[in-house]
Length: 379
Image 1 (cartoon, rainbow, N blue to C red):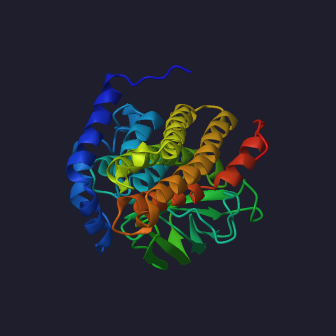
Image 2 (cartoon, rainbow, N blue to C red; image 1 turned 60 degrees about the vertical axis):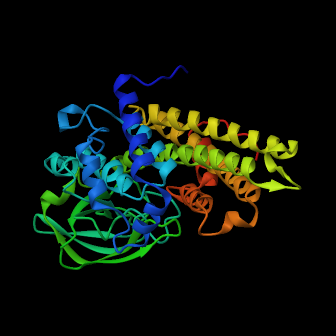
């Protein structure tokens, strides 16, 4: 499949690359990560001014006419700098649900950098199954009352609104009967317990204890939220695949530079043929990851859900497994130093490991791909 950026996409890529190179040095990131919020509001406003928050959205909703490919362009370069700002939960997940669910009035403040979103989709017993929803939404007048618990809601502490899938009908694992609710962070009965994830990002446990939501808080149609949620998550999968591709490319470059400068027996490590072969294998994996990521981005908005799901699951399964192999090689080639917090390579490996489990690990997506009619080679 032939694929090349158009002029607008090239400009977008160049602007993100300049930001990462100029304003996101490793030590700058470490200081942000150690702060109370964990990311920079000033950087987020810059994202808005540069048009990155509106880039993945159609013009009829106030965006710049882009889509998942533009998201991939941004996330791939964010991966190279391990950018901490909540682009994935606010823009990719939350923003796409606002657009699809009928709350386009909130997109303008999102694009302007004045609105933060979180998607609380993870249930304690779900094991990556989006249809496994135990959180309940009971009718109360024209609205609903939500009760339940959600885990690993990224950006929950900073969010102004949290999107919550809850069950309005059916059993805990049925696709029909799931409704998406837009809940204000200030809602009575909503509590967030924030924490830092192993890769330095921020997430939270969300508890809903009799949270009242009016009819205007429903995204899409009552009982038919699963399709909207699955489409948003598939967009998220394509986005983190691009981020992983950027991380892998950076790890290859870092490892290659380390082998050139580190000496053993008086000569650079790069002079040893066996290490050259291992570095080449890493490079091949990174190049293949980039191809898989952009294929997923191209199909992330496919009209046929099965076609979209096959593409993103194929990429997620392949990148998850390849990322683990590449990451382990990078750590080993750095020796014991590769595990230290002071060396950037360890932070890249942590994020790459987290991406494998996010939205379902490579084993889960192999099974999903096979269930959708895709051919899977024996592991």
